[in-house]
Length: 341
Image 1 (cartoon, helix red, strand yellow):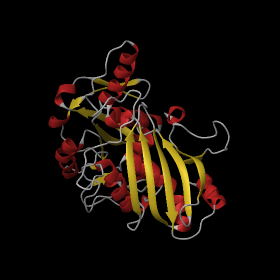
Image 2 (tube, one colour):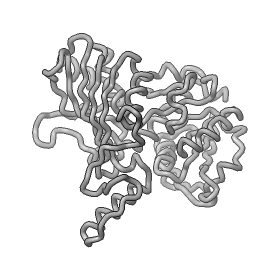
Image 3 (cartoon, helix red, strand yellow):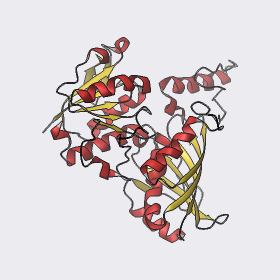
């Protein structure tokens, strides 16, 4: 059976990647509808290599008869239109932060907690986690199964594509401007991003953490284990695509480096690339466009009992957003959940 699928936010970086991923993976869609704001209505977006879709106005779209909605239009827009779609019988996979921590809304990474996709959620909405959380929990799940993670300290190195197309444009224009003596003017970021790093993603909270850092902590607990403690420092770096993380994990029981390597090699969605020589590790530049989460620099952390440290890298537009959403849709299809929509 083929489905009617709506992609909401189709003109954005993630929306375009969702359309590309649906086509590449052959998701069984008889009809795909591209939706965005009224000002984008009539624009054209690619669906696969040889199809072009005309963008329709989200405000005017009737979701009745639509099996699946893949949303990535921004939290404020999802807050209005995701419940509207769900009320019409459309099962929503939302990529924004709007519903992630709400009770009754599953927060899902298919390699980690696919059990939440066995049936249709009561609210008709499934949340896609934050990009930085997704790659970390994919890497931690096989280790957690062996020894149970107790505490995580993580520093992220997040590309500008995580802040959208305008942020990518800003990095490009600032980088070019430096070489022609044109001083950078920050608009998307608080400080110049070209040739710089900015330890500030999302807004600051009362305890001094940023909301991005808070998301990593609360989402990891909701997805992986409610008892895990997480200390995150999230940093924006002048990279177009691909997030990297330096992760230090402390476990409740002993786990050897050899056990960890074997578990990571066999885990779904992971590639262990760690040869301990020059270039024997993954970087954002070379993994852009790849589906896997790459783990490198695995080693024992001697500063804590039962500690391991590793470096993980993933394409934030694919596994960190579009691919994870499409994988959720594929699992729902396999489970027959979409057939009841």
